[in-house]
Image 1 (cartoon, rainbow, N blue to C red):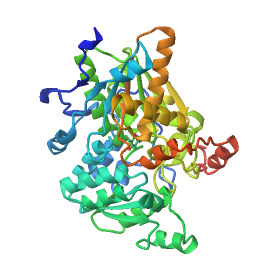
Image 2: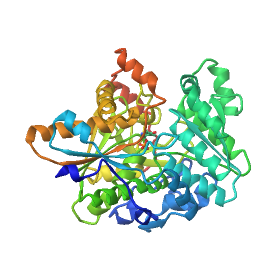
Image 3: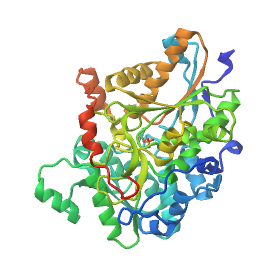
Image 4: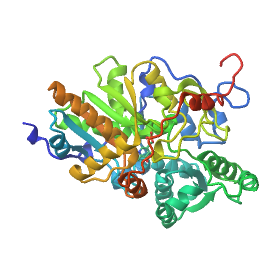
Length: 460
Ligand SMILES: *Cc1c(COP(=O)(O)O)cnc(C)c1O
């Protein structure tokens, strides 16, 4: 009887993962090498040291170690908010009338309200170990800046966050939370950097952009002794840290004798999905049976479903290494809707490779109002207010469960509930007022983005 499965599945202290899982060690083929943006030659680990702290640069390039120890200092921080529960969605199943068994891994139970704290903890820990003074970063929707602020407060490191000006005006509470944790939050573009001043001189009334905030954060980090710039998604190191989600989830599911038929995650830069599917992907990569993996992205920013698999810059400022990934072009400007943390032009090179080679089975794109229909139903029956990003995964999980209702199959579905929507009420208000923007870019608009892809002699 399914009722024997508890609503929430936890882990004992002895069952908590002590190591992260590095999917690359089990991949038959690696993603194409990162290229130096100037010379177009493959990057060497040492060349990453001015950007990332050394241990993280090594993790970024590590293709051989299957498991990497989670240092005690990070484990202690994880214990404050992990393990996160796997929750059986009994109420949602009932509301849908589906024979499917739906589970979700809930990462929103910390003040930052998202899974980003898993990697923030690791990145700040290694920066502290290396004796750095502080970090700089950018934040758009605000989750990454908040997570990093919490980790910097915990480990005792300075943090400057360049927050896209429109976001800092729209989300003053996010800014206040970061400041409460001791971070210096600067609305971008700002007068504090040369690049910010140049942009302001040209466009005094601009609301800013992520690309501009990244450029300011990098300028401040590279110009300040003992500082480094950090990123909250896309990179291999971030997927590695996020593997804790999947390692926990697999053990939790085993405790109730479940192995998912379908694993679903929303995909912005690919870190939560890469993390959630990691342990199960290991099964697939090593020739065992694996689940059917589904990535869900907004129809307004469809990098996997409509993008090109090509070398591109990870940032709009064109200073980061070139990565081969599914991308809309670093010059692609998504319509200003509420997909928040999913509005990124590219996709993790690792996830892109798995998708290209067919290990990540399927990508779907969904429109905003359907996402909020799902978010609202989920909130009412499961009583958790989901982040709009997470609601993309809810939408796909509901659609799969409804297919089961039609066919009468009782599949097991696991999806990632990456965070809470407590700071996203403007989006819920717009939805309620019928003002949701369902814009889907035309092929011509996508072509404009593709025209910004770099040309690399002999390669593309
Ligand atoms: C940032 C964010 C995402 C998307 O980022 P990924 O790197 O694709 O995981 C999804 N959900 C929430 C709540 C986020 O904050």
